[in-house]
Length: 314
Image (cartoon, rainbow, N blue to C red; front, side, top):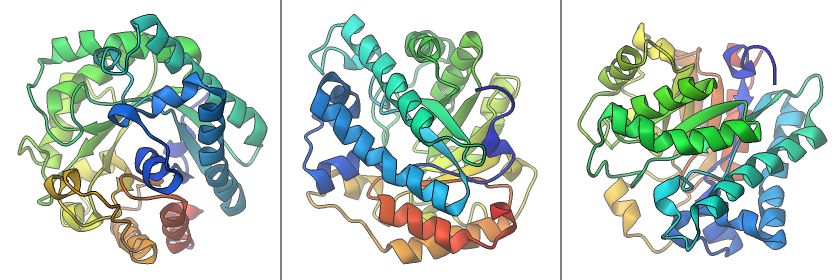
């Protein structure tokens, strides 16, 4: 892909909660919540294509762009052994993920449907708990391996999703710079709108920008219900202009509550769409709409439909 990222020019959609959708709605087992293992079988690749296609059809129907996020959130080096893989095997699955998205782009892209292939990079550990926090240098060194694999496979950009702390987010941004790809950083926030480390979203954005010479193309919020962070975005400010995307959870539950649930709380898609609309009315710079845990095509459709007519959609 050449030229500026389309999501910096106009509205684009992305998918919902890939792993929760596959687990709860399709009955597909994902060891360690790692959807990347599906790339290892014909049936798994078919399931992923079946998952992405309706989202692309939605974007085509509504006249938006689309970000195809690779199923590589849990596919960095530390996950090879838990998944029963050797590192070269995990690397090949990362490559296969990008290749699958390129095939989908070839199938769906048109002059009016711009599609971005994004290499998804998740946290080294848990997406809810920062655990032992690395230094920025350690995080850069760790994530550089996957960043290089995704870049060599042809990703247009990298997305650091469910970042729980500033140092790891900064490290992935630095790794992206090392491989020459734009990067988006998406923070997980708790019910109080702060990162799991206690940092405010404002301070976290500022800290990553300072540590990386403002390298990220933009920031997002994900893995939290709008009720948990809407107050943070209740007033336009200089720093909120760096927030360009929302990928919210369907559930109002806290991360601690979600961790012990045995049934999916998929919330109310229509209500979720209205909550997104309220956020965009206050923060019209937001151009990336998708979902996270508990969301699926119903939620992203409701969000997109609710936001139609806003200036962002034009």
